[in-house]
Length: 297
Image 1 (tube, helix red, strand yellow):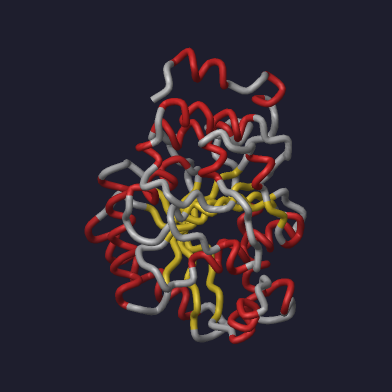
Image 2 (image 1 turned 90 degrees about the horizontal axis):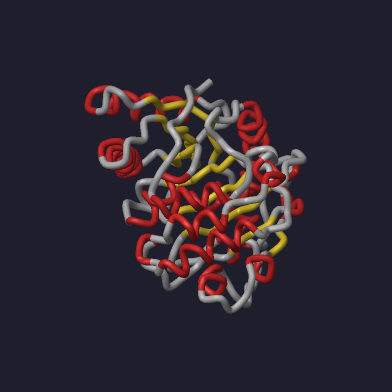
């Protein structure tokens, strides 16, 4: 870990600290195959289309998917920033609606394994970012690996993606249990993906199943239903075209769903403990700390 003096040097200027806080949303799932990265990409695009300044961090350490979905070809990624080979500005990619994308840092097993110099380096990299942001969306890996819990603990909001498969609900519960029992996270947002109808009934049914098991075994955990994205063939076609569904098929059911969810996210209150600047997220990520979550609305 960096020393106290190292962190003090890396603290933002008063002007930066006074800036509007950045909402940090970690998107995760208990298992692969639920469309988590597709949700991250399209939700980020919907937020950007609504006028938000958005950055999407591909945090799947070892398997980059965001750039693949959008047909982007990064020449370098966060790993090269940590090694001092380039700056964060150098690796940023521009995505739909002007959102910024940080390519995955493949080759890093876990954030906790970074050297002290890399700790300071990553804080400096994000502190020196010149782009003002409203929202940072973090697309984590699927499952329960250390990097997933690290990013979820550092974020202000954790969005868990589920679908209509028994293993999806079971593994989502396992993720929530680990984050609650081992790391003290108590509140989670739930998004139902690939539901079979467009009227939200199946999504709410999946949500109620997860609530039931959490109420039984994790009585202090609070779940909040965000909404559902329907199973939409236009979404598959958009992936084939390396575009977001909002760009490729803006009137499709999936595109409408993502815009609706983005609108609801915009109405969420900012956690009272949130501070201005993306560097505070990075400091929490490195320290393994987290602000206590505020009540959901």
